[in-house]
Length: 439
Ligand code: PLP
Image (cartoon, rainbow, N blue to C red; front, side):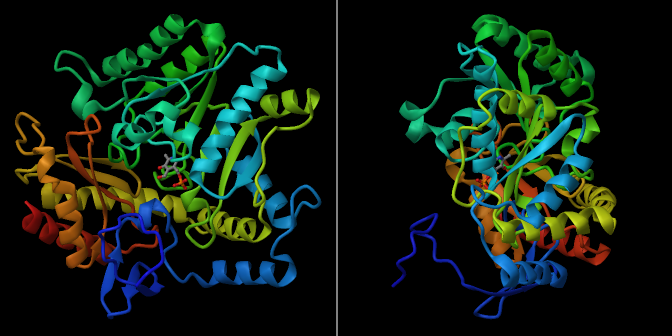
């Protein structure tokens, strides 16, 4: 009998026995195509010898050193690399162990930034519905994922949620994509004015929405308008790239494609590629200098921040992503995956939308393509698809509540960047089997 406290107490899971490239294996010998990299984590696939070697070297020299006593070369080098590639004035990198910690650090840093400036009345974050920013309390409060938030609602910090930029569901027939983007971006301005700009700390958003709504990219101009509004009212723009960052959407930072410069960015998942648990919060020189010139101390920290072995893994991953063309490969193979999905499911009676960027793609499942009506949530279509996909030997990432936290289903795909053309055929054919069985 197991003593592990699992995610779901009623699921009987197979045990992993190994992983090579795009495949994972269980102890019964079954092979699974890792079509979602777990939860958009394994961007390099499994068993990459370069990452293993970098981790081994670091463990053999100094596995761990507490950051109140020592810095480490991997942390210094990884920070330098990330800052060099990050957009705009992003200059400092705070290493943590995962996505929720990165978001939590971002929220606290943003609050402390204004506190250092004497603007202590600022306490409000604005975020979006149908987003996810992590499971720690402040990150969960910022996220707009209703079913995840519900049990903990009394513990939440106060956060406002405006509409997402979700063209398939939100754009009216009488407006262009650009008009739609401006309309939903302007909800930010309305909310800032309602709260009083002097009370607002910042706006938090995923550049491409991940698991909650399924690889939803913004429309052109949306984030430019958001940046304009943040500047006009003097609030911070915090972009959560925990899922969509590190090359997943075809550029190292997802926001590069929006032509904007955020004040704070969070990353995780693909940064360690699953080889080590690592995340990071990156901030502008101005924010860092405000802390440095004020109290001199970010009132935060965990035992494992800047973990040398995790940073060594992250450094090897980012070197591989940027130095061997893997980010460009994500963009290129992502287009091929989109075409293959369109060929396979473009006319499917229950696939309403096929979307995403790079190797971050999703199918939105509907009962009726014409009306976009979702399936009755009681049918838990996403769970059925997941089960059928696993049976067919495919790990993908289906989720329910796509539209509003209750209604809607989607299937997220986030395969490793090393996929070949034949793998794309394998994904689409196994997914087809799964959809046929589940629907
Ligand atoms: N932010 C986003 C956009 C995410 O997708 C996730 C996880 O899925 C998180 C934050 C939380 O990251 P973690 O699960 O590593 O704590």
